[in-house]
Image 1 (tube, rainbow, N blue to C red):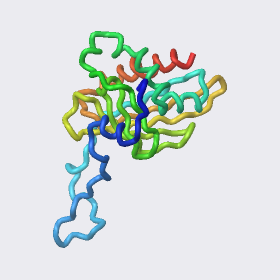
Image 2 (cartoon, helix red, strand yellow; image 1 turned 135 degrees about the vertical axis):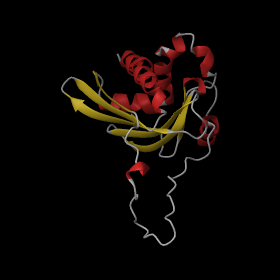
Image 3 (tube, rainbow, N blue to C red; image 1 turned 180 degrees about the vertical axis):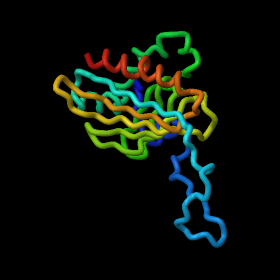
Image 4 (spheres, rainbow, N blue to C red; image 1 turned 90 degrees about the vertical axis):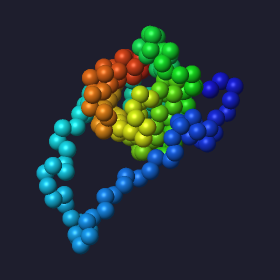
Length: 189
């Protein structure tokens, strides 16, 4: 990001995705009422993987929120991450960290390997993102939710991640620790 003033358009282009569209609503069969519920149990998935993590930080909710939504601050996290300090760095790409922290704003992280858009931003309380890894099939996005709760000695981050390829669950759960939580704690120390 050094030496360039990035615009929202630049960040959106870097994200490499068109505007994140609203969910598509399935059309009801001819003659079915508009509010018809799924007719069979097999239309509902009960086997999707999800990640739930709770991490305690000594930093305030305001500092955590800022670190996750500010380009310069999150780039410190990226530079301290295992991904950037291992042989994985060659796979990540060379795009700079770019964060447009506005609803609908794009983000580009870890050299372009992680991209997405902000769906909801409630300062110091909650961040919700459409989030994807570069190894996923085009158009596949998951939902990540960061919630901040003040604790006596800092902040508890309550994190939920859903909608990702189920075979990626173990790697993602581990990756959140070594690429987000551990370097985030170091950068805020």
